[in-house]
Amino acid sequence: MHIDHIVPLSAGGLTAEANLCLACALCNRSKHQHQEGIDPETGSEAPLFHPRRQVWKDHFAWDVDWVMIEPRSLTGRVTIARLKLNDTPYRLARPFWKQGGWHPPGA
Ligand SMILES: [Zn+2]
Image (cartoon, helix red, strand yellow):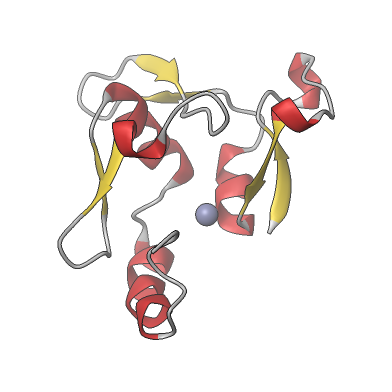
């Protein structure tokens, strides 16, 4: 896991607990310096999910197979798109993670 600055250092974010979260390498690379994403439904820009200020279940849900993350809000849509949360590496890995007992998170 990587330690991500939710507000990037380049945007004035601090290296302080309130601005840090754990992210896997793929998510961290996709987020890069972004704080916003593009809504695939409207093309408009909106803030990404804030893991310290927002609640995951308000913005995301798992599909019945625990493979795909479904958006429950605009924040969910832009975050799934920006972080590529349903791209091929995740879709292929999640069934194996489930078999290994590492997925879904918090279960
Ligand atoms: Zn990730």
